[in-house]
Image 1 (spheres, helix red, strand yellow):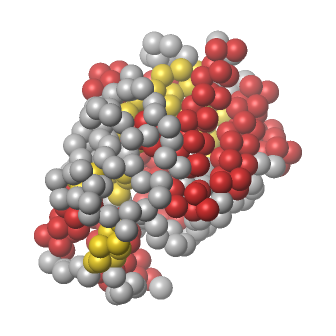
Image 2 (image 1 turned 180 degrees about the vertical axis):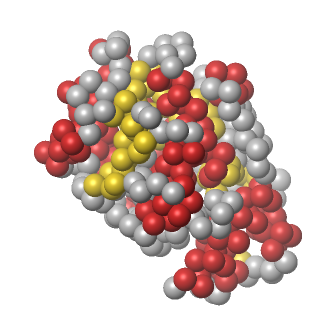
Image 3 (image 1 turned 60 degrees about the vertical axis):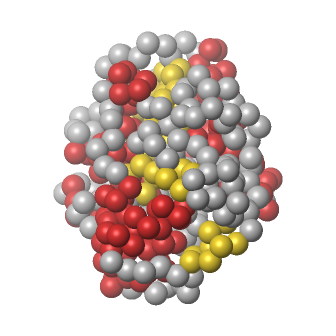
Length: 340
């Protein structure tokens, strides 16, 4: 069994990826300082998989403490790097914090990979690298425009850092996974998105439906879209998790064409904010209370993916749609609300 280090392993996407990795025969060690996650997720992972996962509660920006992880786990064959601050709005308010955290953590992990000869690196990137793309759907060759937020800029810079590292270190292999808007929860109903403060649309919707918040704010209804609200490509978190497993398998089996490849991960179609609200109302039977507000700084008008490259080279494709996402998120919300 090959061992993979997952940074941000107690987070939403990281925890689902750990489950998928274990189910596909990998051993996993996690690094997560719980800045926006909870250690309880480790028990949920164990309940789903029957395997205990060790987590190192350290800050990746602390290079000395990070070295200890690699010294204690000399059989790591790959790194999947999720750990990052990820709120668009917060990044606009606190740009220096985002640059310091997201870039230094990536630099330290790459340095550790080089020092300890860990040859395979998967980076959690984002569709935000494309900015306000002029042509949709975006492909991996779509030219980048100016990032709409400091968060998006850290993803652009992160990719460029990894590409430069790959050029200078031809024995190291990297995959950049640009994913769109993850949502939904694990089929077991034991695990899903559980942020300390919900900022993404899907958990905001489920929290309003369960009574945790009075209303939902739709940021703008005057965009040039079908109904005036922003368009996003929503992908189920279990589909997204499986793409990371397929990416690390691709590198471990030396099937990569070059030592640094980028892949889009989405379902290939867009849904507006208002359409997502309607999809939730349909599958849940609950009427949502939402209000239209002003546009939010940092938001891209519309973005959705072409994922043909991932389908062809990684043998990956999404299996679930927006209604599957909303239904599984709602089932998880009901479970997690009872636990509190």
